[in-house]
Length: 508
Image 1 (cartoon, rainbow, N blue to C red):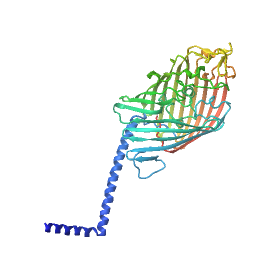
Image 2: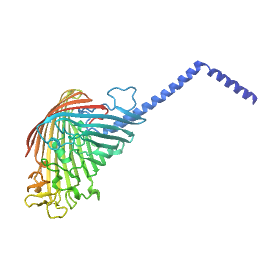
Image 3: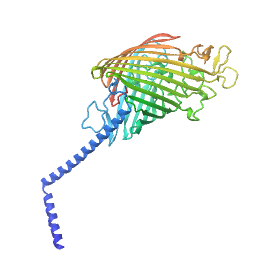
Image 4: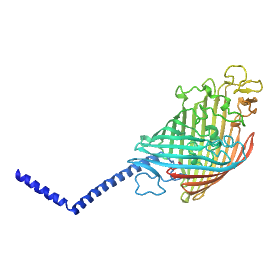
């Protein structure tokens, strides 16, 4: 025993003596560093593998034809996973393990003028359209996107803007999470999101091919488009070509649900604001059952006509209640069809030259309930009540159904890399409602026989866009507007936009 202990002491002393050698210490330290570097490299490669898997799942649920890229200022590279060095083409983001957050800022400013005296809310219906002579800050959008884990990715878009009076406003455009690994081609989305109705509604203003929204979309869906909190399920149908079904269930009230449980106010030539169909939304019944929610189905299919031509067809609908009558059983139905065709040269360079034609048509069927403006039962016309000038009494309306309809059609020609020319034609109209057949006045305003918010109008818009890089654009656009009962107006707008950071590529 004593001999064993003595031997151990001698061996330990020898090891300590060897370890005291600086060369040995240096080699041991080098081995430790190399082992750490090896483990770090393994971790990075594993993260890159996971990132590529996530990208593969994303592609399965995004563009129907990745061979035909959409030109936009926001197609910044969205490479994910660890990077050894950063370049201006890489996104600005935060990464931790398998999750990451990409951050981007997009600012859009327009300068110009118009012959119209009612630019904001009259000539220009969109909430992010140029709204005055001089400069318009159409929006500064902060976008946040990334993968939460191998099962979920998330996206949020916060927008700041200025109205025509110089007042600031802030919007939560979107904030949702969606799955990336459900079986059977299924995907779930939940949160606040733009309804996938047609081609335009689900896009943000900075991705539009023109400086303003189309007339029919702004008329039917309001200045901010159709969006609300809710949930959406989609199914990528197992066909040899792209085929996908969507169904969204969302809240049906608020300013972002204009055709549903919303006042939908508008202005009549300087008179006080009137609710849609000249009925107050005071009789809104709220949510009592599932039928009081907003339901929005959509089906889209895409396939290649030739090796240089791709087409996408879509059909959309939206169903929900509105609060226009005391019965509480009035509903709104909206239907839409869209067609997109794109040609890209076999000898293309950077995606140019190309030609894209896109058109959409919408039809809205709106049930108006019976309504008596003598809400206080006084039997006489009081302040704030709509008066029938034929009787001098508060106006009384019966039940009726009105229709609004319209379309836009646009063509874009990618002349060469960085240069695009576009042309769009818009039309919006509607049938005449019974409520328009008698001269009426509101709050002492000018008598009228026509609901100008539903009067027929059309617009022609040629433009030219230059992309100095994928992070900026300059666009010059002319609008010729003709509004029945008002006449023709001419407008010219010069738009500038820049992107700082990251932003995902847009769908074809």
